[in-house]
Length: 352
Image 1 (spheres, helix red, strand yellow):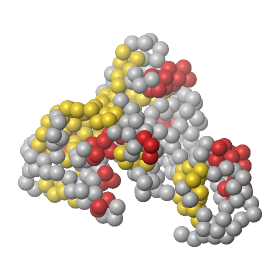
Image 2 (tube, rainbow, N blue to C red):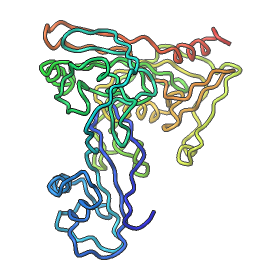
Image 3 (spheres, helix red, strand yellow):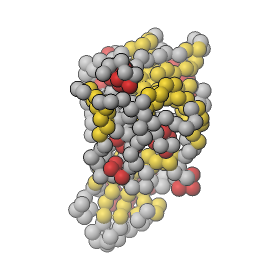
């Protein structure tokens, strides 16, 4: 890393928390300028007032410590900054397929496919769900900002399943309030390595950013930056390790340090009570049962003949909430994607 050169981290896939950019610099000499002036020169899309707000929020650290805007950087200082993403001026409509499971004048529910980011962020301005929504129609709530019209919540890039998108402003804030009050119940299913000792339990372990790898999350104590995270799970079905299955570990150096997952497999249904980044993936890995294909958290790529499953086997099955206008109870559901269906067929011995 060259002195004073900004270093942007790999994209972070998030479920419920706001998107941010992470920056890091190493100062090559003592400076006469204040740190807010130093950062304005490096983050071109933030004004000095914007930088000062980020500093006031404690999102700028020097050598691991929060500093004030008046601090003068010194030679050897390691500066870390968390900032809002660069705004975009225009959303490009794209004919991205949308699997809509329910739609009325107020919102729609869709079944999100794998390998699809929710909205533009971190230099990726096209190929997202939002680009597809803009192409599909123009009536979307702007309550979440012009660059993510209608978006109420998010799923990881490679997590499939049901999502809600608001059309009207009223529907947006009414649904958002339900998310905030945690009265919306989300149900997920996942194929995991091994079989949990307890076939039904509640995982209550706080989650925060991994100490070493920014794109990862980890179980962290509250006093070390973790936030409360609760997941209820139930094992639905168990499978033996059938012949002809090959499990392939990640080639990333940090991933190779993770323990080998157990033999056998299980289909697990989960109900998150909170919405932390990567919560379900981190929680299942924390009890020794990472999701199949989730290389980041200790899972393995699943291969059987010509079939390969190389993403986290996680699907948002259904979501229960109150209609924002009619106030009727609703539970739109999203059928399993074909790759998860085939994975289960192989584990059941129906496709060998």
